[in-house]
Image 1 (spheres, rainbow, N blue to C red):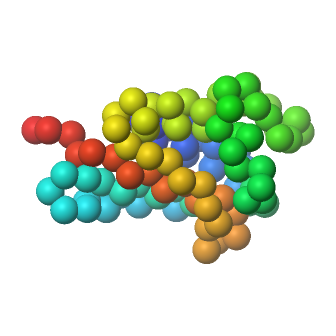
Image 2 (image 1 turned 120 degrees about the vertical axis):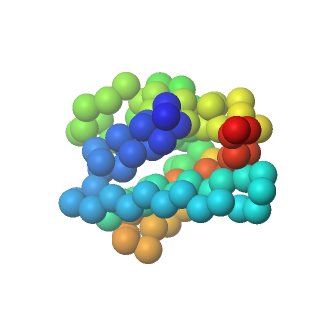
Image 3 (image 1 turned 60 degrees about the horizontal axis):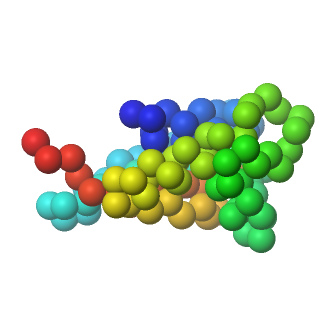
Length: 103
């Protein structure tokens, strides 16, 4: 919940009006979660910066600079990964590859 919530909060903060979230099972053991928005996006050369705790690239919006670093840290703690990319909607796309929860 913390991973998805922080990712969606970030998308909601930067979108112009649209956010898309998808969760797709990848076989028996993994899940891919994507969160996309139609905002301004983030240049590839700056993406590593936003994963640093407290880093903020744009001071015009409220926030602590912790959201995406928390998403990245939690994904790694669960033996998953976070990839930042370009959304087909024009903004940023977060792609999380996570192990599926055992039931």
